[in-house]
Length: 220
Image 1: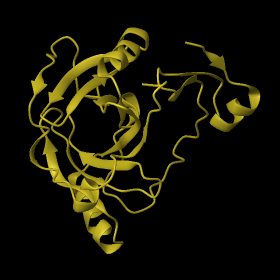
Image 2: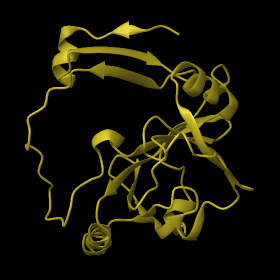
Image 3: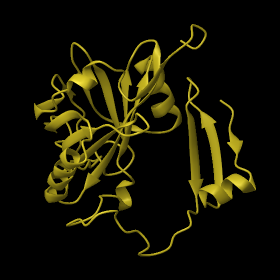
């Protein structure tokens, strides 16, 4: 694996002190940085909210990657990058592993999709259930596609809805996710992704999940 250091132009664009970037086994670029520029109290939400987003020590939500081989991906993200397994969901249709690096139940999940690679969804967590409910009202008002209906996940207990974005990347918008304590946490395997809800829309059933591309034979 080749590691590249960011030049001054990239550092200015990212507003960081230093940055290194590299690619995973299928060409997805990752960046590590420190010294992010910050202006206290500068963030304001685009709409009125009861609370804010759950970030801080937990970072910004989580990302789910589609990978052609979950075992090969596990070697990269665990053995090289240092992610720790939270649990797994294995069903007739899905093989997904969830990983953490801090208190958030998972900052990364890997979903096996043989012959394909890409991004499934990005999750944003809000502090109050009311802000999740208000979002659902706004989706209806603005005629935004709901890819998966309101539901509660079985492993991290997140209550959430999945929506389409203009880029094609799905957004999971949720509330109430679990936190992980490595001293007491026990990784488990679940056979159902959700206790209830999270029903796929007709649109979701007819398209690839998120931003996903087929691999050419040499990349598989």
